[in-house]
Image (cartoon, rainbow over all chains, first blue to last red; front, side, top):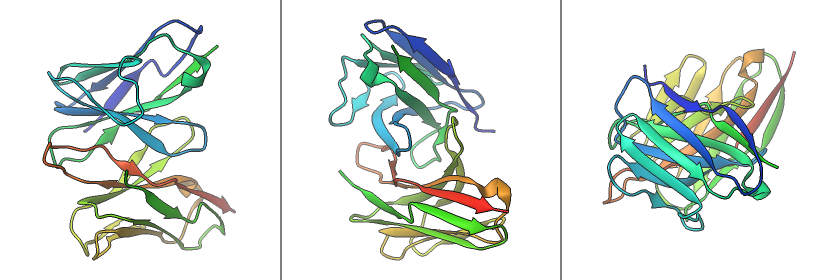
Length: 115
Length: 114
């Protein structure tokens, strides 16, 4: 149980375009989903917290207009990188939890390369 | 924000040896977690610790939640080649607003020589 999927697994896009990444909880309902970013050989850094049906809470330094998060249902959250630039190239990982105090389960990650 | 200091950064060991790594924090956490990440994949939960002083095992892995709630260690006994990977500690703090995201350590890269 507790499987989280992400789509796509990797994406290459041109600078200036927007990219949407999906995060799905497959066998449980996730009241909260989190988005993390990981640079090569670095740790995971929390970008934002997304609660179903409400606006996402962004960490300091993360541009909300650039990284649009939608958590429209209890099993799906999307992260859209708008007007992507090469410095946005990174490994984006989501996690999901059923409720407060429950374990976070991570997706397999999405590798974004912006040319 | 909170920071986790994880050490060592990397370990080169022989197969069969025991491994120990730890994390310390300048502030307390409600939950300590240990994850393993392999290249190109998301982290996989190894052990979750919910109470100060708690000692929990998962097969050859043992982890403890420090009494002060500011530290945790992970031990791996009798290492095998498939233990290779990057191990991350993570702390979780519950605020009045509900679920908080995890704060991760910088990782310990475990390399095993057969």
